[in-house]
Figure 1 (tube, one colour):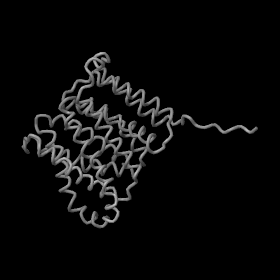
Figure 2 (cartoon, one colour):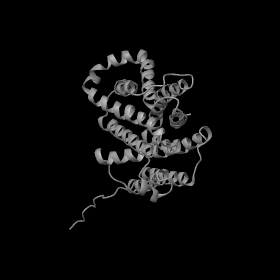
Figure 3 (spheres, rainbow, N blue to C red):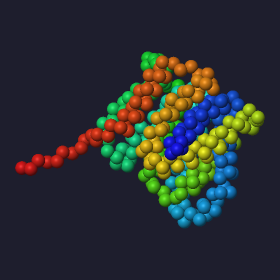
Figure 4 (tube, rainbow, N blue to C red):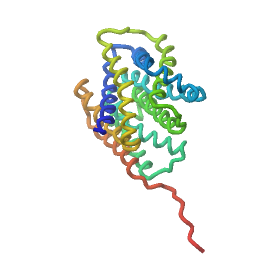
Length: 297
C-alpha cells in the first residue's frame, strides 16, 4: 500500500506531460500555466489561510526564499513545459525530465558539499549520452548541423530549474509544514505568471480545454504533490526518488496510446542510457578522491 503513493504521483505527472501536448491548439501555454495555479490557489485558500497566519512568524523572514522557490519550482519549471510541448514530443519531454534526479545530485555535490561518487560521474556521462541520442533523433551529425530543437532546449532548462529548486529546498530547510510551503509557492506562481498571461493571446476556457486545466490543477498541482509528500514520509526521500526513474517509461506508454506517438529506436536507446545513468548514480556510491590514511613512520 505504501508504494501506491509514489506510483500515483508518477502516473499523474507522466499523464500531465501528455496533457501538455493535448493542450497544444486547445489553449495557449501562458493561459493553462496561469489557470492551473490560480484555481489551485483558490481551492487551497479556505483550508490554508489560517495555517499561514499561524505560521507567519516563521514565514516572514523567509519570504525571499519562498519567492525564489515558487519561481523556480512552479512558474519556470511548469510553464516552460507547456511552451516546450508546442515544439517537441511528450516522449522526448519524459526522457529529458528523467535527468532531474541526476541534476539534483550534481547540484548537491556542488552546493551542499556532498562527495562525488563513481556512480555519479559515470552515470552523468551515460545520461548525457542518452539525452544527446534523443534530442538528435539518433543522428549526432544532424544535431551538430542544426542544433538542439527549441522545445527540447526548453525542457532541459525546465528540468534544470526544478533540480535547482530541489537543491535549495534541501539547503534552506525551511521549518514550515509541507502544505503551507506548497500553498505559498502556488501564490508566488499566480503573481509571477499573471503578467505573461495578461500579455499573451487568449483562447478562453472552453468545453475542450477545461478538462485539461482541471487535470493540471487538481491532479498534477494538488493530488500528485500530496501523494509524493506521503511517499517521502513513509519510504524516505532516497527510496521515493527511485520511483522517478519510471517517469520516462510511463510517459512514453501513455503518449503512444493517447497521442499515437511512434516510439523510435533512438527513444529506446536514449531512454535506456538515461535511465541506466540515473540508476547507476544512485546505486554505485563509491566515493572518489577519498583521502588515504597516512601510514605510520
